[in-house]
Figure 1 (cartoon, rainbow, N blue to C red):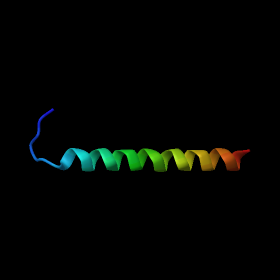
Figure 2 (figure 1 turned 90 degrees about the vertical axis):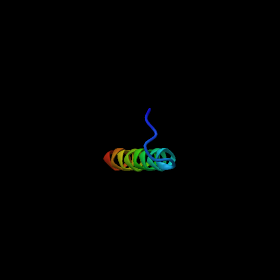
Figure 3 (figure 1 turned 135 degrees about the vertical axis):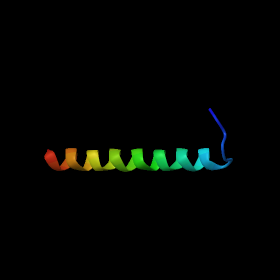
Length: 35
């Protein structure tokens, strides 16, 4: 992995984790309403 600029990796990892959490929450909401 190339480190072109320091401090970017933690930010990207946080954004990805937040995005995954939001997608899972939306999927669970749709599944719950589908019951």
